[in-house]
Amino acid sequence: MDSKRIKKLRQEIIKAVPKFPNNKGTKQELESKHLADLLVVYLNWASRLIVARPRKVEVESTVTSDLRWNAISSNFLKLKEKIIKGEDLIPHLSLKAQEKGYTPAASQTGAGADKWADKDFLLSIMGFYHFHLGEVQERGKNITIRSDEVIFASVDRFTFRAIGIFDHPVFDDVDPLSKKMSAERTRLWQLFDNAIAKGVPPGNVVVPTIITTSGHTSYVVHMAGEYAKIIKEVDSKLDIKEFVHSLYKETGIEPPRNPKFEWYLRGIDLEVFDHKTNFFSVFRYGIN
Figure 1 (cartoon, rainbow, N blue to C red):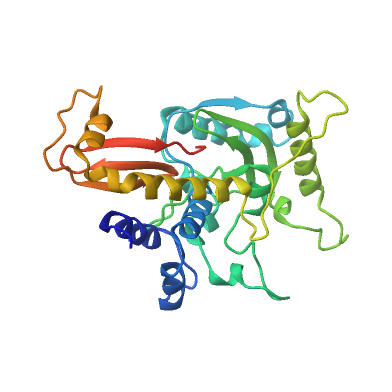
Figure 2: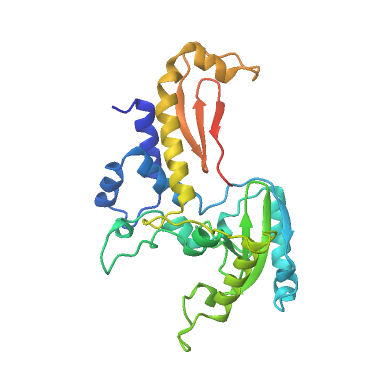
C-alpha cells in the first residue's frame, strides 16, 4: 500500500505529463502503472525539456563555418545570453516536447503502432536538442516564433555545446523526391558519429545510446528503476526522527517537531521537500 506521500507524487506526475489524447482513458492507463513505469513516462517527457540554470556555451566550428552562420548569428547570440544567465529555454524547444508527453498508442503492438509518438527520436538516439531562434513569443503561448533554421546542441547541467545549423529536412527520414536520406539528416548523422568517436583510440568499439524495446533510452529506464527503489526505501524513514535529523544535518536549520515531507521532482532531480521549513533534500541529480 502506497503512503500518502507516494500517492501524491503519483498524482502530480499524472497531472504534469501532457497526455494525448487528454481523456479519461489515458489518465486511467497512467493510474494503473507501477511506480517505476510511471516514472519512465515522466522522465522520458521531462528529459525532453531543459531546466533553467546558468550554463557555459561552447560553439563548434561546424556551426561558425556554416554558410548560414552570418544570417542567424545575431539571434543565436541572444539565445546564448539567455543560456549564460540561466533563463528559460523551453520556448525555443520543439512544440512536441511541451505538448506530447504520453500517449497509449506508443505502447501498442502491431503494424500500426508508433513507439516514437511520445518520444524525440533524434534526442533519444543522439542526445541532441534542437532550438528555434525566433525572438517573439506568440501571444498566450510559451513558445517563440518558429525559425527556418534550428541549432542542434548537446546540453547537460553545466554546458550548452552547439554542434550544427540545420534546415527542417533534418527531421525527415528520407527526401520525398530522391527517396534517400536527406542531405541535412546525413550531415547530422556524420556529426553524431564524429562526436561519439572523438578521443576513442582506433580499433575500439563505440556503443551509442541503447534503446529498449519500448523506445525509451536505457538511461531513462535505469533511472526510473533507481528512483522507484529510493522512494520505496526512504519514504517510511521520513517519519523517523533520527533520519529527519540526518537530512537536516549541516544545514544550520533546526528540524521541525512534525515535518511535512513530500516527494518532489524538480526537472529530473529527485528530492524531498519539507513544507514546514521550505527545506529541500536532493537524493539523485538528473543529467540536465
